[in-house]
Amino acid sequence: MSDISSMSRESKKQRLRSQVITSNTLYSSPSNQAPDDDIPHSAQQKSILRKLLPFLIITILVLAGVGYLFYRQFYQYTGTDIIWQISLNEGSLIGYKTFGNNVLKYTKDGASYIDNKGKTIWTESYEMKSPIAAVNGDFAVIADRQGNHIFICNTEGKVGESVTLLPITNVSVSGLGLVAVIVEDSTSSFIYFYRKDGSNLDISIRANMAGAMGYPLDLSLSKDGTQLMCSFVHLENGELKERVAFYNFAEVGKNEPTRMVGGFDEVFKNTLIPRVTYMQEPYSCAFGGNGMVFFSSRNLTSPEMISQVSLAEENIKSIFYSDDYVVAIVRNNMGDQENRIEVFRADGKHVLSKEFTYDYTQADIDGKWIILYNDNSCRIFNLSGVEKLAVDFDFPVSKIRKGRYPNSLIVMGPQQMQEIKLK
Image (cartoon, helix red, strand yellow):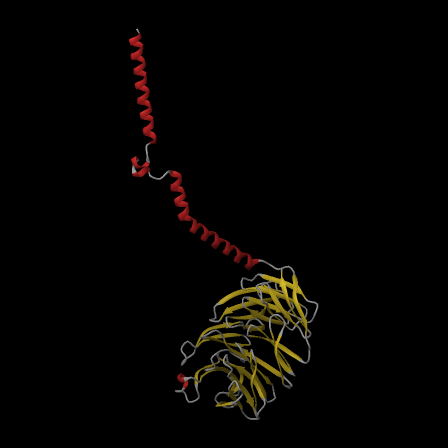
């Protein structure tokens, strides 16, 4: 009986040993596992996550950037805080011009260059009865209308001056300091050219009302000074006709005796062209009483008309422009609001129509902000047609432009200048 019990116990021990061996095979070393089971499932997920993480971060940043731009585009400011404020000597203020990154203040007695912190960088004196000013990049010219004095400066101060023999009627400057001046006597008009130091260039254009070209109304020099755009009015069969002419004073214009490389007659019907301007290369624009015409000088020897905008059925109240955009404000005949903004790119493509009611007296475009203002208030629209700001001021305002920050303005008056933060 004891032998049977002993055999039974031995049999149980063998079965237990067999179970232990079988159980241990479940925890054998990794070197004994198949390749497919080399990485646990959780480790595979972490590896995939590490690969996707850069893409997830980029996606989040892009979405955040788009959201911020959308917010900036449609956010409307409701108030202002003064960042800095200075008092100015009014003198005989004529006006302000955006000049470089700052502003040019010009009066009958002199000019000052004031930076975006209100600091006067330089001041130069002169005496003029009726100053007119033109700016192109870092150069500016101030001339005495119906007088003879020309004052030329850059952002560092005066660089030249000159005196004409005949009365001045209009002036333009290139981005390199070349100056073109329209002068006139009792029978003819002349366009003379001056270097930036004020010395006379041996180049001139003569015109008169009864001649082939007519009487020059406005002129504009290209940034490099090699091209001139001019509008004329002339008599033809007893009727006044308008003309836009292009001149080239570089090598490509030498084949033309008069340097005129393009002429366009009657681009408008029954209206004069009081203003012309070069914009971003190669575009330019002529403005009439009932619309505007866009030109391209991509072919320097043969400028072409690329777009004509007619606003003949509506009264044009204002036209202003930058290198990139032209803005016309017309009396609105199409809706409930009193006025309508029409914006075009330099190539003539339409950007925006926006109705509004506001009694403005002056208007500018700075970057992508359309700034309308009068003596004591301001309205700002962006190129999406959103009214960004409506604010009143407690001092007379002469000019408004964008400030140092995306949400600030420089507000200038005869006696005061301040930068305000929009909030």
